Image 1 (tube, rainbow, N blue to C red):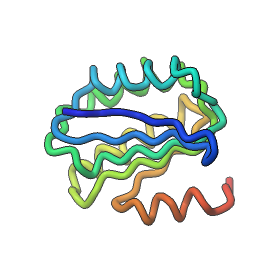
Image 2: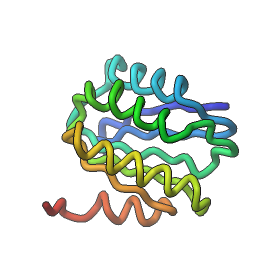
Image 3: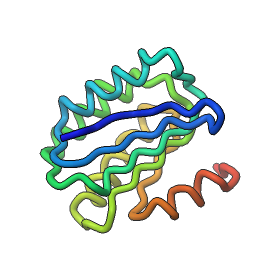
Amino acid sequence: MSVQHTINRAQRTIFITGSGDLNRSMLQDLFRKITTDPAFDPTFDTVADFSDVAYLDLDLADIQSLVQRTLSKDIRNGRFAIITGTDQGRYSLGVYFSVLAEGVSDTHQRIFRTAAEAYNWLASPLTA
């Protein structure tokens, strides 16, 4: 599994990509790495593309744990676009994550099946 991030200051965006297998500890480690990256800025938007993840080793309890342990301490306040690809199960887990995260984070999360949908949302004005 490979999960990595890059921060593009010019675009004011944090890019996350994942492939292969993905589990809770990998995601927790990723969030720690992002927030300790010297280029990190909490106002940047985040695009997480998990469409190439082959196996998602997460259940509902793992997602609750991620939200409570990671996002409750999340200082980002930009938008967070999560791209799941076309797999319905992965998309449903993403929606569940987003609903839980709304209660503990100032980041506006949305789940998308395609990168085009995610980038269209990021380019549009944020509405309440």
